Image (cartoon, rainbow, N blue to C red; front, side, top):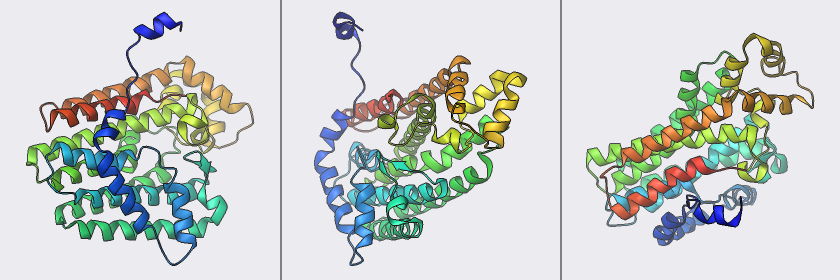
Length: 336
């Protein structure tokens, strides 16, 4: 792209506006995170900080803060809920990396490779406990119920993925059920809890939950697409991990359906039986791209981002709403 074309291109979506609006609140959330991940057992803060300090934009707690402010929050009790959301998310990542034997997370060596799987699992449990302490201290029984339910749904989603997502005959409906539970539920609960903490109407609370759910689905669809097209810098993990683990994500399922009998032996060997050689991922990438499976996955992600933005039509403070809608665009604009 030359300079003239670049100048005419629309600006890339950014969370900068949302981060500027939420700067003071997110600083308070970060302070709560640092305070509550402390422990007299040295390995706990060391291991927790390894992952939390690499947390990037903290999109899920940012969702809680933004929903609360957009819905008219008058105090800052939602900051405790936002910190709890980050702890829940980090705990699930620690557990997930052990289950998947992941080597990279958020661009850093996975914690279980440094401190061992037992420590990673137990520190994850510690963070779950801290999350519930924060939820209780926030003083909203309904918000506590929302985030407690989300913790249960996420666990169910992880087990469902563990038992079903290696099936190359997995349906698109089951795939969407898995990612709705294991990924999108926390986005939805984060936004819902924020609106609840602001004392919003039931209509507004439902709108924010719908927004979060659709953003979360779009986010995971793009994550799964990037596994076949991205780089470690965009993913925070190694490209091809899903393929090497035999996970039947949507780009793969689309490619399997579109290549038909001609590539059935390849997919059965590499994904079904997990018998792979060095060149197999490159071939899988080529098939996922050439069949249009990657593009179809991204089209669906854009559809969910549009649904998210429509959910907030006329809801809450217009400045916050505009920034949140841009967050939906950011979720689908990530690339290598």
